[in-house]
Amino acid sequence: MKDDDEKVREARRTLDRIGQEGGLSATPAMKSAANSVRDHFSAADADKADPAELWGTRIARALALVALVGLVWFLFGQLSQ
Image (cartoon, rainbow, N blue to C red; front, side, top):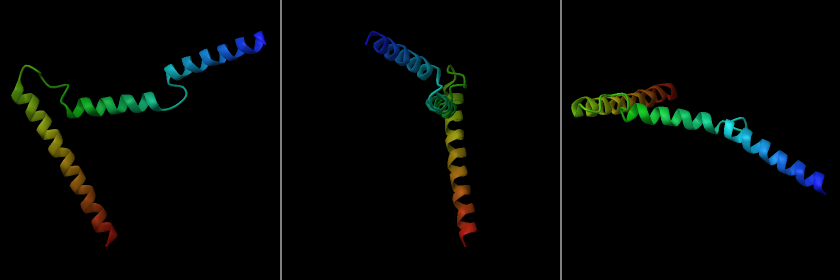
């Protein structure tokens, strides 16, 4: 009985460690990618001391996203005809 309990505890510790390192799923990679996209569109790389640069960067990136969506929509519209 003691051996079984010890094996179960060891297995849980191993699984917890692997889960924290990101070996069980792509969740950490997806979180990293989502954080990268969030930082890009919130202009985390822009100068925080200059509000014009900060908001200009945010607006430009949002407009670029809108243009991309519009172009993809146009492309699918053309291909579906």
